Image (cartoon, rainbow, N blue to C red; front, side):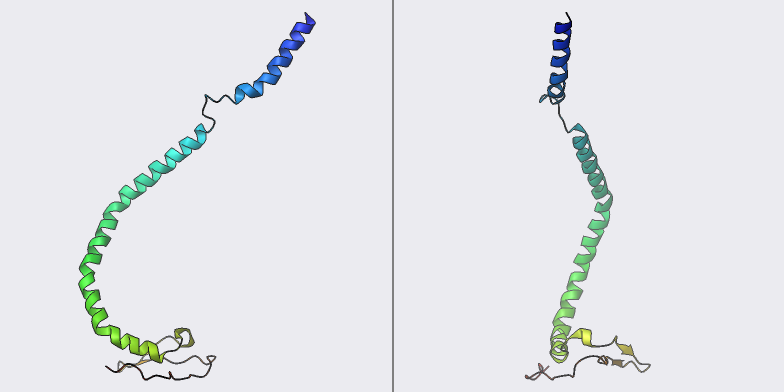
Length: 123
């Protein structure tokens, strides 16, 4: 009798890990619940943000003509300025004078200025 009891206990002990790894049960239920919670959270965030995104799209549509006109008018002048400025990091922050002039000074630690070999774009 003791032998049958010992064999039964040994069989139960060795089968317990197999029973815990049953393929029919979903081993990652907690992970699936977390995925579902994250998905619902993101859907809620998107639904809350959708009106702001729509307003931003409307604003961009209203600003597009003005930005196009600015690029057409100021584009050549900005290109000319960029041919004169070798590296923007070598200059100080612009200084606005009382008379409306703007001065952009070269930093003291910048290397000497070498003018471009080609003439700037004529307007």
